[in-house]
Every structure is written in C-alpha cells, then in structure tokens.
Length: 212
Image (cartoon, rainbow, N blue to C red; front, side):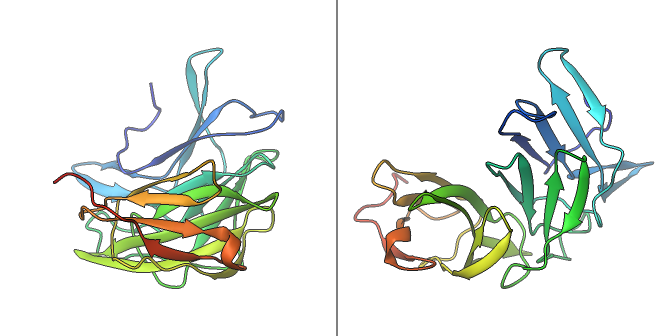
C-alpha cells in the first residue's frame, strides 16, 4: 500500500530502461495532516516486481495536487499546474520535472500561460519529436480554455494551443492520423488538435457531441 494516503495525485509509468523504467511514480495529491486535509509535496514509486511502494526521498518544490502529468521518452515525469492548498483556491502555473535517474525534482524554466488545476495533459508525437500538451483546467469553479505545448526533452514552451471551449478534467488521446482528440470536461463537446499546423498547432471543433 501507499506510504501516504492521497487523492488528486498523478500516477505515471516511467518509460525507458533506466533504474525506474517500468515503475510507476505517484506524485503529490491531497492527504491528511492530523484532522486536516493538506496538499502534499511527496512522491512514491511502485515496483510491480515486488508489489511494494517506496517513498522518494526528494520532495517537490512545493505542495501540488490535482495537477496533470506525462512521461517523456527520456524516462522523466513532468507535472503541470495543480493547486497548492487543500481548498483549491490557490492554483499554480509551475511545471516540475521528476528525473528518474537521480530521483530528484526540478522546476522547469517555462510555466503554464496561466495558473490552473486539473489540466488535460498528453505526451504526443509531432513529426518524430515528442511534445506535451497541457490545456484547459479550472480556477475554483471557473473552467479555462488556455493551452500550452512543451518540448518533452527540454520541458520548454513552444507555443499556445487553446481549447475552443473551456473545459477541465477532459480526456485526450493521439489518433493514428497524428491529431489529438479531446472530449468532455463538464461539456458534451469534443475538439481535434492538429500538430501539423505549425509549432503549436490549433484546435478545431469536432463534428458531433458526446451523448448527454
């Protein structure tokens, strides 16, 4: 079981053949401090071969919960946005990289274009280069449409890719065509993102809605 009970965390499989390759990194979330709920700055690693969790000794730069996370081909995990308090009133825009080779965290120089919790995050391929989309989310109960695209290897921002419809908690997947399909997020609408349209690409409305 987890060393620390938590909710609103991320759980991401480490890619590659490094020391943590094939293991799952659990980052942040909300946990208990006495009788109070707090945002956490801790992480744990799950090893399927032993069925055990082990705490990461290094800590995040600060508490982070309800964020988005993606794995890179370099064996790293990148966490985007989230909140630094239990109530969700303090959204954050920082981007933090977990380096599996050293099991350490470092803040990226680039940040989200605005602070938000529950962004939709997806690593995708663009002409042979891995990029990460971090779009939408919310601040308190207000959904956001802002989106950002990052180079996965340097975690540097390369442009904007805003949703046409504000949404949070949406799901995204890259289609065989290379386009990214995004659906839901407290709305029945869906959108398509085309990375081929330039450095960041652009979203367009999908011809059809989810069943309500």
